[in-house]
Length: 199
Image (tube, rainbow, N blue to C red; front, side):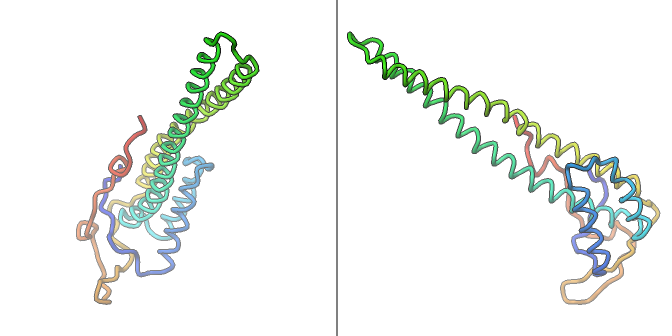
C-alpha cells in the first residue's frame, strides 16, 4: 500500500512535525471525501516538500488513526455478536417454554400469551440489530478503501528526486542530516498486516 521507506524517527523540526500531525488528522476524518482533501495535500507538499519520507510520515499518521478505529469497530462487532447470540438463546428458551405449556392438559394461556409477546419483542430486537450489523461489518472495508485512496493522493504529490528536508534526532542526542531516503531505517507497513478483513 505504501511503497516507500518510512523514517523511524519523527522530524526534529517541531513545525514540520505539527504540520504532519495536523494533515494526518484531517485526512483521517471519514466525513470528508479523500478527493476533497487533494488541495490540502498539495499545499502541504508545496510548503514542506513532496519527498517520500515526509509524505510517508503523513501516511503513517493516517494509517495509525484508521487502524485503531478499525480495531475498535471490530471489537464492537464481536461484542454485538455475543449479544445477538444471547437474544437468540432467549427466544429459543421462550419457545420451548411455550411448547411445554401447550402440551399440558390444562395450559395456562395467560402464560402462553406472555411468552408469545416476549418472543415477538425479542425477535423484533434481534431483526433490528441484524440490520445494523450489516453497516458495522461494511465499515472496516470502507476504512481500508479510504487509507488506500489517501495513499494514492499522497504518492501523487511525491517528488521522486527530492531528498529528506528535515533532520532526525539520534538516540544519544546528536542530530544528523539524512540525505536520500534509502539511508533511513525502515519498517514494512501494509494495512492487511494489522487487521484481517471481517468475514
